[in-house]
Image (cartoon, rainbow, N blue to C red; front, side, top):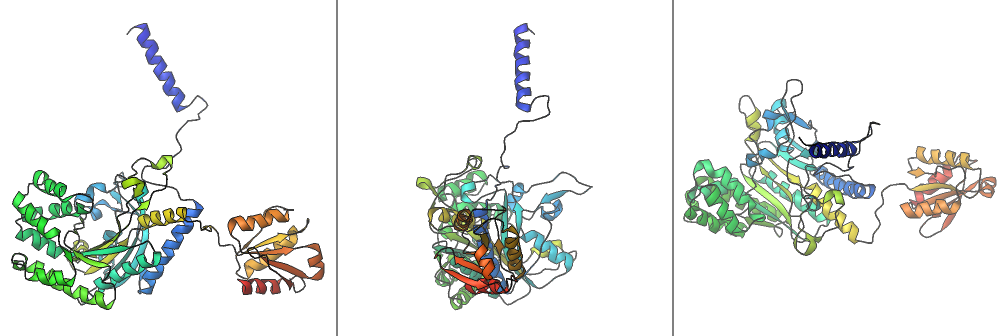
Length: 495
């Protein structure tokens, strides 16, 4: 090695050392969240909490109870349940002799929970984080760590009654959140499998072809056909026949028509699915939601565990995208002309065989459920908040205890404690002698509706001024010899 080469290598090492940090032990590194994750500021959390409250309120209205399960499961619990999506499962290093994986969704852990505890009937909701080693699209609400909000009904019931209720729940939540126009696509795995059979798809290719059909909401038919033929070995004739069916949409009338279809009527499982689809639409009519539900033969949902009815809710509009933060720009996918296409915001279906996969005796527990895409919904709500002039409150403080003069900290502390004891959300500024203007500005900035003002003259008179920050109207309330009970009552009445 020449001297110049040695000097060059030394320079590289010195540069690397500078990047890693000096001898003082300090290291320089980029402060950022891991790819596919994000932080949430108080404003975002306030919007998020509002969404959660709406969803939980709906779940409870429909009689659900809640459970929780570990964030990781034995790897064998998750293996083989998700079809081609299994490659997105996060595996953990061996810890204490167990091979573990982060949960991919809340459905498989729920099925494991039912089998393990021998539960045959339950209506439950579960809100928790799940993890997918996916390629994130941050502006579309697609992350590697995200919440799912699941509602499931397990038990042996008459056909399509629980299924119809799940669709009603999706309708209620999306309507109440006021996200804009939406529609709910429904199909049935039995209809899909029957369709594949009569179109000439070999049995062993059902699931992989189903995964390809599931991409029709993201890809053109020609691209989907190309994948089926060139990558998955399907004949062009079979692909073209599938193409004719997956272009069909309708309602109960389409189910009736397909029951008399020369090809599809030859499949017993397709006929069973179509009969149930007719029954489902009759219940949806009673629930008054058929204006938003469409029977769509292109809907496939790629997960392997679905056995019957499947559904997916899609928003019909594209929103303008906010400018992503620098740390979010990797993986961000924008729609046309700078908009953001959010796509599916809820999905689910019937999975009657999943619990039996965990039961030692193979006992089946019929299940149907729905998962609300909270992150995608939150992306829309956040965009709407940015476009709106309406201010988002990040605290729930109802009254600020303020003083008009100096040396009244003790009195402020006493009154604040009385308000807390009365169950009123109150706070005070952490200064001995804050200026009154500063205290009033704090109320306006944070949206605190009331301010209780203590002053020397008011204390002599045994009263407190309670001011409405927005209207500046004031009432004077006697303090019951500084017991403050009347003040608390006055604040409660105003609130």
